[in-house]
Structure formats: structure tokens, C-alpha cells
Length: 132
View 1 (cartoon, rainbow, N blue to C red):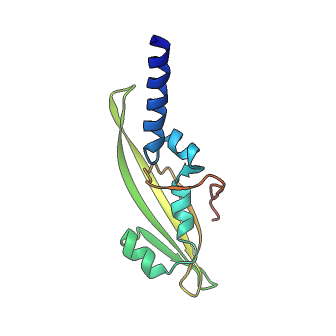
View 2 (view 1 turned 90 degrees about the vertical axis):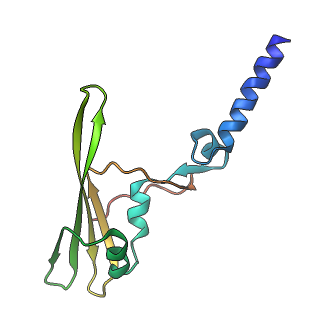
């Protein structure tokens, strides 16, 4: 009888975990994976520069290339608590986009970013690689 309750308890726990959106078990059962910052950055490709600036705010820097394209960079400083040292570390996140001469985002990269992204995508969707 105890074995029956133990199996029922484990089954109930799996069902509860699977029902939580974004949980590893739930994602696996629905053939999904958690979104990454790379997914978000890739989502900007093909979008207008004005929409990018409206969403991210004023950039830290920009540089116009001879071909008319523009490189735009945003910088963020994130304060992170290190449990091992019991001190705060600072991450200097840089998000950079290449805007083509027609004003459309064409490439991207990021450096030192530790961002929490919510949402899921199909598990078969490869994680995009930086293109800049």
C-alpha cells in the first residue's frame, strides 16, 4: 500500500511540474525549450531601427560606416550577488546591432549579458548564434 502512495505521489509531482510553463519537465513534455537572450536578439533582425530604439531606449554609442550602415551599442551594468564571496559583482552587458543603410536591423551580438528571458520556443528551434 505504501508503494502505491509513493508512486501516486511521484506521478502527481510530475504532473504538477509538467503543468508549470517554463519548467524543464513541462517544456520537455510540450517539445519546447526556454527562450534565450540570443532568441530575443535574433527577433530584432528584419525590424526597423526606430522600433529597436523605442524599445531599448537611447543607445550608449553609435558609429556610421562608409557604406551607410550604423553600429549601435547599448551598455547596462547589472549588480549580481555572489553567494560564494558574499560580495556584489558587476556585469557590464553590451548589446550591439548592425543597422543596414535602409534602417533595418541585420546583425547582432552581445557580451557579458546575464539576462532572464521569459517564454518558450519549439525545442526544434536552434539557438541563434551572434551574427556580428
